[in-house]
Image 1 (cartoon, rainbow, N blue to C red):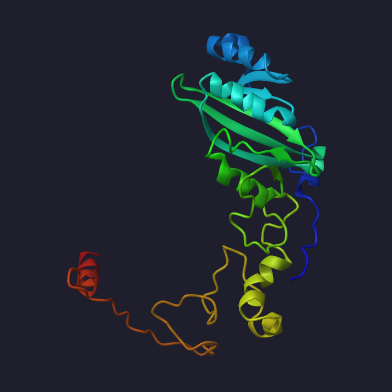
Image 2: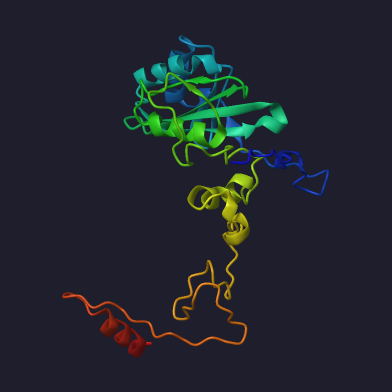
Length: 261
């Protein structure tokens, strides 16, 4: 397996050509404007140091130190926020040299949401919250799989979506949108071996590309031909036959559908 070669970060590219254009920010308000959030902030502040707090999009945002994530979530759980609906990370490596990890907390009884934010360096790890919320198990595994963020004391920290021997982490902003060398050759190397690369060719990782005359990879319903057949001089249509079961005659259903059209 060829090792993944890092590409230039997309964060370093200019998204806008107008140098005077300023991206609008989502408006925020003081926590003091909400009685419920104020009480929650007071109880959390007794346990950990809250670096910043505000209300945004009807939810309270708390910024804390990464080492205090367990204490903070425990304090929120004691205050009625007994559900961790989501947790993940955001790649700010090119801009700040850090990951931002967020925990989305929900209180069903209060009908309120709290978003907890903390930052870590790429060489650091975060403590697992599985002892507090079982729902964090797969979310932390996905965060490790997609971003490469290590989670200390996780009961079973391994890749969740990508294969165990995959190289790289697909949600990093340095990861190419169409995949890298591993993505192009993974299944070919795994199933057939590297000696078949020249015979089969790289995988097509462009989801928008469909070649009508591709006789090797494209599903040619109604125009099936042999593998690699030359169809440059034309092709003949193949009658589509549908299965017939005891309950449903699909051929009859297709005939009725054409008559309705």
